[in-house]
Picture 1: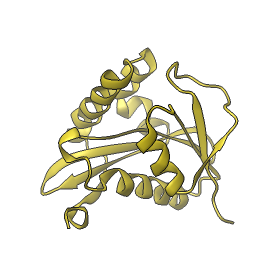
Picture 2: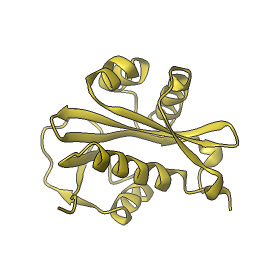
Picture 3: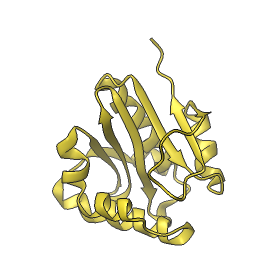
Picture 4: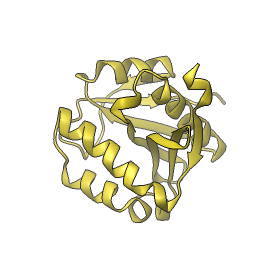
Length: 157
């Protein structure tokens, strides 16, 4: 099974172009790249890593096929963001593996809260988040014009 061959890797500078390319592809397909997206995708070290966040990548047979980020908002609070899988590799469970890895990483760094913003037209993504344990919550401050749903992962004590 292909999903068993997928490895989850931590950020490396040479992976930055994949982070940008995969995310811009889905954003341009469904919405448009907002200013906040462009900044984060073009400057992942400054926007995410240097502020205490993390970026993970899915690799299959030496090819990077997907990515997800944990953006630190404040101590113990992270936004799961910029999850994208290369269109050629969808259907291999890379999104599920990335989501699971992001949750595990959040738990490892002792996050108290993990949330995400999405849009209900992305039905497959919303269903995946629900399967992984995210639940819809009332929307808070929202930096994305495209977002119409907010979800949170509740950690077990």
